[in-house]
Length: 378
Image (cartoon, rainbow, N blue to C red; front, top):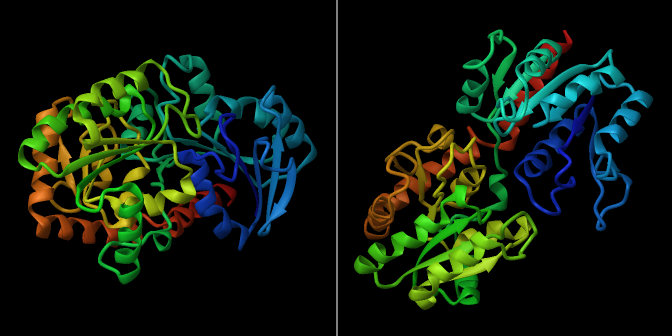
């Protein structure tokens, strides 16, 4: 098959500036390129050429200005069996006009069928035009099926994944050495490190996590919260919320450390410093891909029962799930439990690693997507 991946207009591919969609594409693209002809469309970036063939994958990068129109022009010149439009379902309508003989898949990584983003008549036209819809979680599937009449065979849950080989769990020799090196670099050798990795936005709940430290430190004086991320991917400029977080953290002195944004290629190393990883999402998270990374890294996880998070993290099986997601005390209890009960924390981490290697591998993601493509082309 000749397959096209069309990224959003936000970030380039490969994921030189991060991004959950771009990282997923990076993970599955080599597997598709090994069996099919793959072209990836994305926006331009100063660090990348406009056109290249890398590792058997054709990359076509077009200016962000009038991105969709540029893609339309490209599609008119080419022939694809399957065109996969990532997280921009409305664009299917004019992409299909440019490539009427192709099969179309749109994947949902956010609630793109929300009435705030798409009028009902437009959404119904998209559903009628696409050959398949994939979603990153059961929760995301429900955001569509609760609003619209969708055939059962049209919509598929395809979880994202991770390349576990890039992560070194702390129980391996390599993991122990890397953990020692990284903790020295971050000055956390003697600390119980609570790790947050993600965008610094109110929906991610970093403020609740900071407020939980008052309770955590009462039980674990050596606890330290390390906050990794900026206001946006590759953007460390402060905004009102980021300034608020720094102000909120001031009374804790060196017990809270901000690193700003760190490029995605270094994140597997960053995970090695953590004793507990926390996803403090306050919104209905579609399903934060950082869960897959924490599982692969062998770090015990605390997450919230919001959106799709609890579909990959089972309470007391491969992590702890906080129902009272807005309560600093609830987070503190879960964090303190894992810092105190090292045996339980290790058992959860081992189960997470096992799932990252199997159920949530990029190979599994690619296999599920390929099945969708083959089905719609028959």
